[in-house]
Length: 107
Image (cartoon, rainbow, N blue to C red; front, side, top):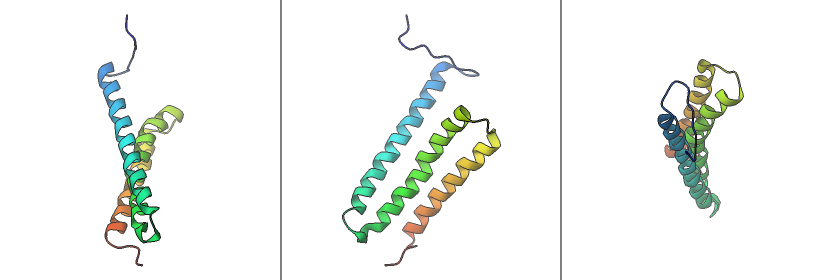
């Protein structure tokens, strides 16, 4: 008797389960790093770049991973629409990180 019965369409259940586990791990790591950055920001207004790095990281990793799982589950948006939304979030996150690293906010 199996403790966990998994059925996947189009692939081996172990591949589907490992993909889901890796997505959860990447979201947890991203949120953990963002929390550390936000704690650094809270030490004073001179550390505002850390807040922007946290925002960029969340839009680069966390939001796209949640969209990849949530959009097909909750909506009828096709692959093209999902790709556009995910890529847009990733580009926004990357842009925010680059803006922060290269001095987008002068003090």
